Length: 211
Image 1 (tube, rainbow, N blue to C red):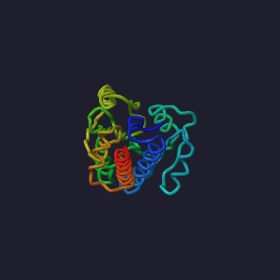
Image 2: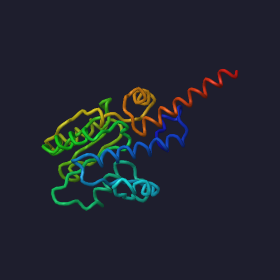
Image 3: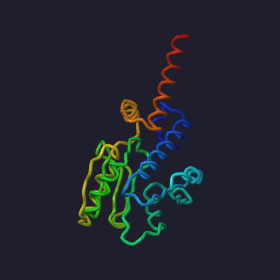
Image 4: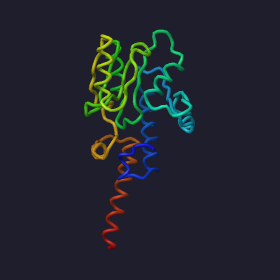
């Protein structure tokens, strides 16, 4: 079940649609970024593969649902990397992601062994750049920014922290939802949300009128 913390606002079906629209947006953005050569989506849901046909991204089925960190470890073991390949690990729920921020993050991080972009609240990690695969084990989840920094410092890896709005903003709760609706961004995600919010407000008003 996706985006549970938005369940007070949206139905399960609406949240599923929202999740897929954000995935579409992230994939389209990565396709525009000049620093990205290939994209792989790892998921336990085979249905996702059909959605990727026009995106240029590869699909990696993880089999049983492993959870985010084991899924990333699984993907890095399965993907055959070219010599001198770097890895960008980025979330699929970034509704205002833009190619400029992606290129800035990858280009700047490439001067270091690891680049890290925290979520806008400073607690999570929304993107990791690894100069070579498997430099550190992924520690996504609660307080992941602090955990990743601890792992980086334990290995004395040269790293760069970049705070970029397009990468840092994710959609997790109703406060994020309000910020996104007020944002000037105009993509499939924001249009879907504004339409749904208007519909729900109109429905609420009609119920009050009929009382």
